[in-house]
Length: 429
Ligand SMILES: *Cc1c(COP(=O)(O)O)cnc(C)c1O
Image (cartoon, rainbow, N blue to C red; front, side, top):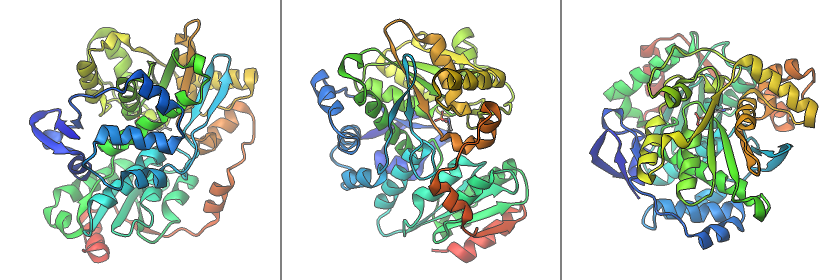
């Protein structure tokens, strides 16, 4: 698979190189220049397979025969949980992507990336450094746990992640180093930036990032769009509309790659009050506002970094931006919608899924089948869900067990020199 830097077309890399490098020159994203679709017969055959067998075929098709010889085994190991399609409303299903180890859809991308990276680096070692305000850190920590050549350092702001999120990051131990920073998230992110700017540290610990622009995370996510359609009765498979709750627009990029591969579908972009893309699609002007805090906080992003990939894909495929349906939903409407669906069908939405369900229901036409993406388990937003619905949501057993474990973490001031000497002491290759 050849990938090109969207900002500098002279930089061309293999899939493996793109995974290792993350981002290209001038902060350009790596992306494909064309996509060879499956035939209608091939799509039919794929839709009759199980998740793992089908994902092996889809990703081998995208990545090509010459790279990642252990791809098939990696997929079997990474995708070891289900993604059920659950009827939630009259014409709408939820694709529940939250049955992985950290109960978030990010488990798909992070688990795949961890195993691919581990296979690529061979006998060398590396250190993943990431700052998190919650979910990504948990998914990354879990995904890389026990990958023996890779150390992980997760920086998180003291007192600003939920107790559950902290447990997921800090109870693993082994190669996962949880570092609690005595400052807000922005300082954590600044420390990570300083680390990547420090050539000595970079070389000494083999610094690498696992952030959401890594192409491997996107490709993993293509697979569950096929999985969703495979669970529909045959006669409904040609009228599918996906509604995706968007933050950095990685998830929807993956869906559009599935469409480019031949999956018949239409896409609805669902945002919260951070509505840069909906306003852009309406007016043609790209005018990010200041990011505002909402109850669907994983989507609190006003400069979505995967958007150039969406535009690149439209260009490759000859799609028009005007083909997208879209909408943005306030917190009040998000809560009202959670209550309305719970009363109507008993289905429990957390805030991100509620945004997607709401925009889907506003855009679904007669005869279409709606699928909205459930990106997190409702229990991960337990306080909001309990308060809004007046219920007492039980924690899944696996999470309750983790909360009971002792945390292994280091408390640190927001000071790069301290972080550097800590990493050199602990992680030097
Ligand atoms: C990360 C995240 C999103 C946004 O996904 P993108 O790929 O960034 O668009 C939506 N919901 C939840 C729960 C998330 O964690």
